[in-house]
Image (cartoon, rainbow, N blue to C red):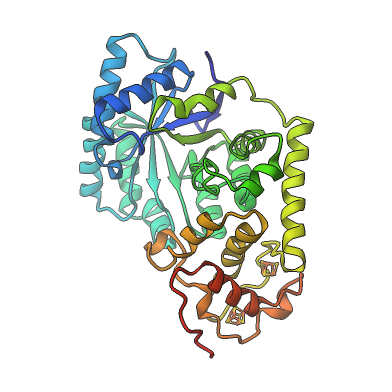
Length: 378
Ligand code: SF4
Ligand code: SF4
């Protein structure tokens, strides 16, 4: 079976699904079973990272075994791994050589700088020791191309895309959170590859959707609709973290669906959005970001997006999970929750939807916070 492949920056083409190795860490055999199924499904792109514990070592052994068995995609496996920004030149050299040694390769196709989340990370890659490291890795033919992932602001991601330093990027683009689609399209126009970060799990735990979401997407399962939406938007490849061969079933079924959205799919997406807006009524946040900046740095759109998901799509578990992570994940996620709103009202005249933002933030906090705290103003 062959899954469609798409251009990916200046490197070899990659399958529209990418096998993520973060969920097959129980044993070498588990990763072998998943990687073998990926081969049968026509997947040629595997994503790993030093941070996934034994993943790179397991992958090295699995690739060797698959090669001995002749189970290698026609143009070989394409491998992506990651380095964190901020490393010294010497430490970066040591870590890159460590990746190559663990995976058992002399050159890695795609190296991503993982988590360009703040400006100093981008500076490191463009003009700091990271820039020296990238140049050295190219000069030594240790990498095929360089990319980045980011959980940072839209403006930071735009600067990274327009820097001409990177040939691919990994972004949070999702059916239920399409705000970064324009950035993905900018990257594609600039000749970059774009990988969607975990569109099922990070896109709303779509592997375990609410009944409301299932019925809004009917007749198409939410996870399938999410994959088809991203592929139709032109995203190069979607990561899929499989823990068992069955997890790749949907990728196999969608192998020949690399086509524009059908009218049934378009209707499902439209119905999904209409139903969510109806449930939210006049409290729907359109994510335009006009309310910013807030003097207390409250990330109003991000918090009201979680409210949109919780009340519009009944994604309460996912929304609570994300809300209660605020302030606990460093620069990987928001630092300030809705409880910090001081009701100064500066955002009110800027909202085109005339939302009563402080009231909605208060409601969001009571709805999603696991440990409700007393409001600062009362
Ligand atoms: S009312 Fe709250 S959210 Fe709005 S600007 Fe003031 S502190 Fe920020
Ligand atoms: S201005 Fe209003 S609609 Fe736009 S993101 Fe802010 S709260 Fe939402």
